Figure 1 (cartoon, chains in turn brown, purple):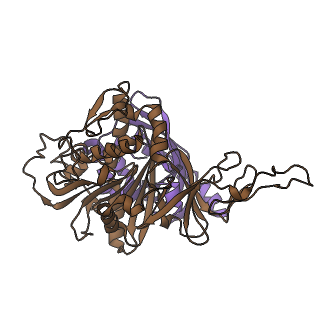
Figure 2: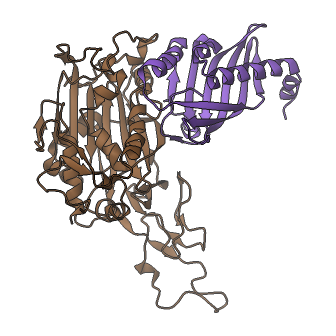
Length: 408
Length: 165
């Protein structure tokens, strides 16, 4: 059976081959990462000045993101059109123009080929072939759009606008969190021992959070008994889940004898770690949002983070976190965000476990490409919205979205 | 080399005391005596694990960020009781320190380290290399960290960091 042989009306059983198969990985690079999706490239505040650049990856493709002299952010493939050398080697910096160090070919900050070293040869000898017109060559460009300070790019030439791609519900949560001047409080990066989709499933899995993460459950940062919901956008592509801590209808479901993650006796010597303030009028204390394919935004109390998971072959991936504050924060609020940041990142009281699970599932499904996982919590359909988060509909939605692109 | 550094480094006894202190610190972590780890810090100590990139950019968040000994103790109880991760251990190699400043009973020191990690039966791997940037209180008898900033050389951590560095 082909790993892509899904029933298009049922994404509640997924063959494990999707996490390990080399052909699927190669196809995914074409259809998902080079294909019809908007990919997160970074935040505009990471590139405040003309000439500021960063290098990163869209799927396997190395990309330069750079602010040009007109203030516009451009993105292009980081691969010289001459012999394929990386044009930018550094991760971040500031440049007047882009120069490939191998043979000194230069590009402007839009990625257009500006000069070829010794194009006319030396003393009339040598030089570039007459039929090579440098004005026809440029680093392959991505279309770039920015929304609430988030910069996205796509290789596809016929994508809907960024906000149409996200849809109104998703845009409204992004605005709620980020439509103000933000400050970057730090970045983390960790290598994960499994396929990128295992991590995206985890991000969209509202069922696991209070069962895996003792910290969430014990300190009531999230419980499924709290008021909340999970919703997906049209076609399952993106998801949003949220909960409101102050509205908990717990009726003993989290009895510590039944639920491993619920630890009645566990307390902190320094409970100020969890000190928070009601930042949002809606009362939301936890919101996790994924934007297809590999990007997510989350609010956990007052710690606001972005996550991007980049594939590194079928069996490895690399996760980057951006931790954000608001420029308008008081010193006390900023201090609370920094303390709460102990919940996230590679050493996060909550997030460390999500990173570990990716590797455990990879090892668990090894040698079983045709066997299937079951995603039937909350039924098998992909409703647009459920008030119950004891539900895997957002994970089913991911597979619906992924399958839609892969079937192209 | 500035004169004051030469004269400070001439203080072999002090250097030896800091070196011994650092080695005992590594010992309690590597030998899983983590309940003794908070004792190395003063009540109001700051303990931060950060990356070279965040540190150089003055970005404040930490992979682990503790503002006092209570938060340091919580890191131990969390990894004993609350957090889930695969059993693993560290082996620290800690260089002799360089004293960078001295004022009254407070010293500043910088020390290079390497930390190997062994996850269950896997081969040991280099988990982290970096430097300790310390402010140490010396009461004449004992030393205690008032601040230990662990600056990892690389931005990238493999999978997770549960045990402190």
